[in-house]
Length: 402
Image 1 (tube, one colour):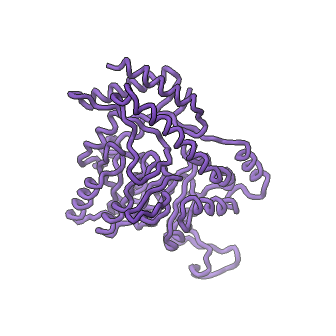
Image 2 (cartoon, rainbow, N blue to C red):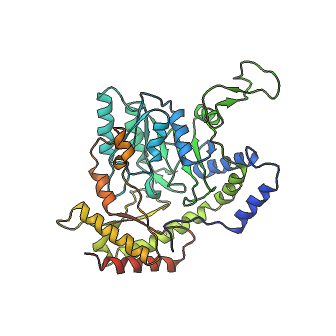
Image 3 (cartoon, one colour):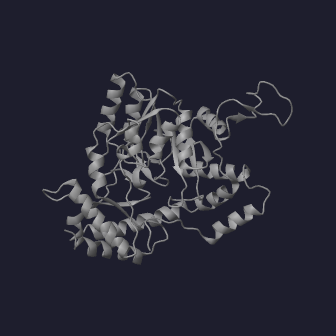
């Protein structure tokens, strides 16, 4: 079975973890700081706080943004639910904004309308979380301008985009998660991401105050900083100054992360080669009439966490019809030992969000995207023959679709 994503673990990665197992440190040791330093190098951000998961990173970034009961934030309707749940964990209310179905990035028009509506209701958003979907960077400059109009914090959800770049209006080329247009950015190191620590995540920022807050929140809200202590009983002394969490990552995980971080450029380069092979085939007949690869915005160089295709909606066809053909393609590929995936079910369609009254809004873009999207295999361990196999299977199945 050829999966949609898979980690690439090499012998030096294994050796790095074995070396750490034989060391004095398994957790809370020097390897965590080494991994955080590596992340700063990969993103260009000044500070990094490695945590137990991308979801933990979203939660802590919401807390560092000051989110709490009665506050409102906005994120994209096409994302993994954690982008919205991070706000809920903080006691705040997430509101979803519709997407551009051609890119699956948040629609700037929809975001403006949502922000204006919330402001008119007296609950202007305190946090905006743009999602770098599939590996390409959202329009962070435009999102930041909208956020600045209501003094909202921007947290870039860069779980998909480590290694990607975007070009500013002035022509500067910036890295995803550089925090040049966001106050913070979050990363994920799940096995299907660009580099892995097994499970793990991080928050990066250029804000020293946010950095110090995140360090405390990661470890129960505890500090040993002499400048913050109310008294000192001895060198063992510490104080809990806020309700933090046990969101630490281990030295074992970070040993793997440091080894993997050194390979990011190679891994992303291979992902781009695979995407180019797919693009070249899908631009030809008959594929061009059947499907369209997800668009990469102008000025963005994608890191291709995912390779997403969208089935073309035929004249007179409903979204239900498109979804039926997507299911036919999904099942047909599985029969041929290829395991695609769907990223993602719109957040507003989730029953828990509906029960909580969080599904209101206009989501025609998200619904149109979801009906026809399918993620094809994309990971650096693929060989060219794997791509050819997927393309051939897509052609065989779609040629039989009604």
